[in-house]
Every structure is written in structure tokens, then in C-alpha cells.
Length: 275
Ligand SMILES: [Zn+2]
Ligand SMILES: [Zn+2]
Image 1 (cartoon, rainbow, N blue to C red):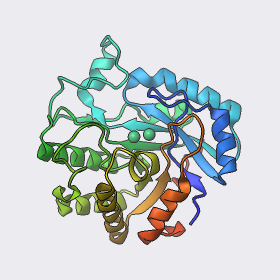
Image 2 (spheres, rainbow, N blue to C red):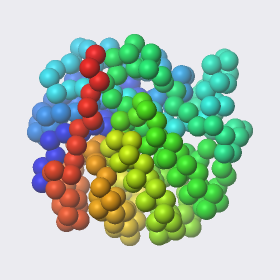
Image 3 (cartoon, rainbow, N blue to C red):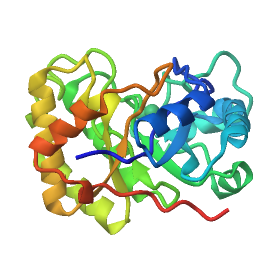
């Protein structure tokens, strides 16, 4: 199995450690035989909007057939969106990660007008952190599920990124025992993605190839992906490349998916908005 598309890639204009120049992406994708792909730099809150202006400028210079312009938005809270809009100060690269209401209203930072203004063809959306729910594993599971469900129901989202990605120490959490997540949550998420016509991302760098996860977790995660597939979920491939060059071990990821029974026909493209 060979991947020929990739819908989740970061450039040097992303607010995190990503450092690839857009021209190196175009060259690297061609070298790897990737025909359709998109840049998706991060938007957590409005604080990151200047990055997207720069991302779009670099995209314009390097634009070519098959190369698309997207964004990766985070699930955040209405509370922090309102605070940033009201002029909250300080370095808010990752939004306001403390002090908000647990169980409060969820949000993404962009609306239809923003999508039109920036020429965004598709939206990848991910759960990246606990929404003020503390650090107890059971609370985190409920909180992440709530966020994934929110994204799967959001009318502006095309792809739900890396479900159950977790950054940071989570002893006794699902990265140690994925079975702690009730199957009913997987069921509910799968049904919602199907009903709302969302693609679920199979993420290479941050999940399948990630060095911080154990082999046990990766096996369990693969079983989860198979569960979603059997439930009828449609997937997209996202390398989530943050590297200086487009050089991930795509073959290794492809072999992992192949051994789990995935085929090229399981992977789909978002339908880019007509601009
Ligand atoms: Zn992400
Ligand atoms: Zn990403």
C-alpha cells in the first residue's frame, strides 16, 4: 500500500516547533509520490491568526495543482475565545490553559467569514488538552470524548484529527491501557462521524510512528482504528509532519496499517471548499 495523499502537514509558520519551508514541502511531497496534500498550520485561538496570514502568503508563492490550503484548529473553550477577544494579555500561543470552567462551552476559533477571508479549503480539528478537567484519568477520558464529539458535530470541521492523542505524562491513563476507554464512547464517536460526514484522521507522526508511545499502546490503538473501520467510519491520512523536511517513514506506517487490514480504498480526501 502506498499513500498518495496527506491532509495534515505543518510549516515553519505553525506556532509550535514545526520548521519546514513551504518550498521544501512541495519538493518533498513530489519525491514521496504524494499527489494531493495540504498545509494545516495551527489555530488555537485568535492569537495565532497572524501565523495563518504568513502560512497563506507562503502557500500562494508555492501553490500548484494538488497542493491545498487548510488549517488545524484546536478544540478550545468559549471562555478563552472571549477573553482573547477582550484583549487578554501575555503570551497566549496555546490559548489560556488554566482557570477556565470545567465542562464549559467548547469552541473553535474560526467561523465561516474567517474561512472565506483566508481561502481555507478544509478544516482539520483536534483535541489537544484537557479542558480544565484536571488530571484524573477517568475525568480526562470523559473530557477528551466530549471534545471529540463536539468536533465530530461541528459544521465547519472536515477531519477529526488524531482521536485520543495525548501529550504529557498520563500514568494510569489510556496511553498505558487503552481499554480503560468505554467501548460505548468509540461507538458514539463512530456513529457521529458517519452521521455528520466527517473523516477521522489516521495520524502518522503523532500516533503510529510516535516514539513516546509503547508498542502495546500502538497495538491497542490499531485495534481501535479497526473497530472504527468496521463501524463504517471513513478515514484520511495525516502525516502531521513537523520536521524540517518532508521525510517521515511513510512506508513503516503503511505497513502497520496494511497488516491491520487497511487498504488504499479506506482512505479519503476532504472535499475542498470551492473558493
Ligand atoms: Zn494536532
Ligand atoms: Zn498537527
